[in-house]
Length: 383
Image 1 (cartoon, one colour):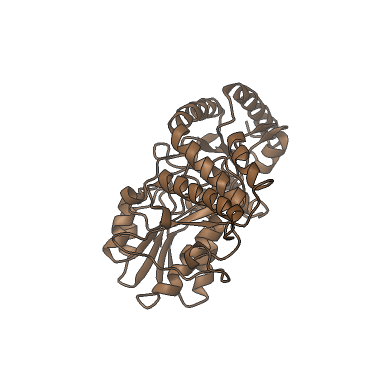
Image 2 (cartoon, one colour):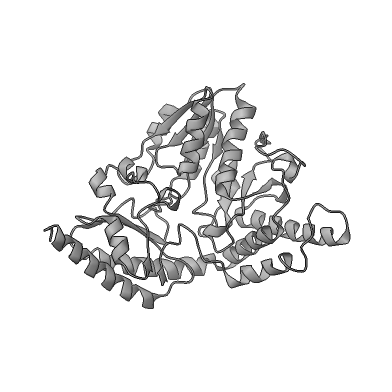
């Protein structure tokens, strides 16, 4: 199997698994217990919290462990809505956000909040002037993802956060696809709230974190989603997943050390793959080609149904959109926002490379995609 769906999830790094194993076997204590056994587990949690904080330029007390980005997003947006509605009930986000953000915003609309869903340009980038025009005195939160999960487009987060802060709004960025792959510093970028998930950068599934700013210019207060025990500073009750948290910490530590080398090697492979596939007639890249994450390409194959393409690629794992919406028969809301027709959106593949891919695999991928594309087009009389 050639696995090229790393934006959906990555393979766990063996070094991460090695770090986790003791907390699944011998050192299985509850990190909240006060006996020596529990204190040992708690030390593992403290170490991981520091490793995550170090990766993103945060303080240790600003890291809240969660079950992943979806929970972190819910905690952030609903927490802000609950605690800051006296200032206003207006939220600004973008049409191309992950469904975890969009669905929470739609839920809040049923509770009396007003949400502005900003369009993007044809290359996927947000028009800064459009953002400016949307901001109001009663805007309490602006949420714009750092890296798009389907196309890899990178937004100008620093500029966007500055505009949000000018009207006194908090700024959240969904950095699920960015953390561990790109240098992310919460102070440099002006981030107040930031979800992340371990399994996007070679850690385990089922564990993530939310950065919650507790330093200047303000200390953010969130209403908890889960009550019962007061864990994580009262923001997220529940027995800590010590093994998963240790794995997240190790993945963060490895990313900090190896990110530069990973980006150069993986980026070179992506460019080689992309260059070869674009030689096929009727292909084009979706999204801005300059401001884009190095590991992913989203390609339109004119005249080819993406599901048929995926089925034809024996032993090659790629996708046609977000893993979280793969059961949906609707076209990608991201690609529709870019201006593609429904037919075009149903003809696109997302190919995302990772740490464990090598260049030898790509020759097979290129040959397979070329062959399947020609077969599908011949069946529909499109050359």
